[in-house]
Image 1 (spheres, rainbow, N blue to C red):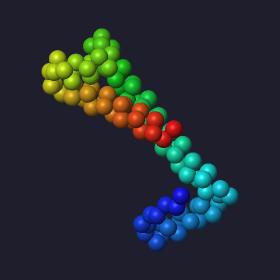
Image 2 (cartoon, rainbow, N blue to C red):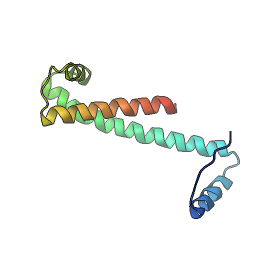
Image 3 (tube, rainbow, N blue to C red):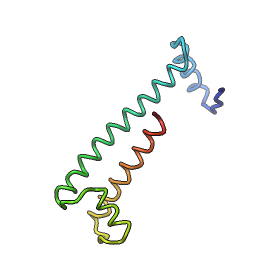
Image 4 (cartoon, one colour):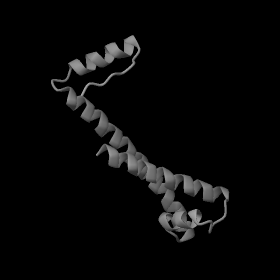
Length: 101
């Protein structure tokens, strides 16, 4: 499969140099994918640390809390919106990783 990218000439030159260092360009792209997965995994760890604080303070799992939120069973306080945002970030990052693996 060929990939067509619209790159600035300087960026194109640098990418071509990097690719020339690989005997198999597929390895280069696999490394990019693995790096992206690694970044997402680190972000998930940080989000889970924040979610743990909410869960400990409320005595409720984030999954249960989110279900309650979706069913309008919790208020729209600042903490609620922050918890929802963090949980949605976790879900989104997990989806991204699933697509990349």
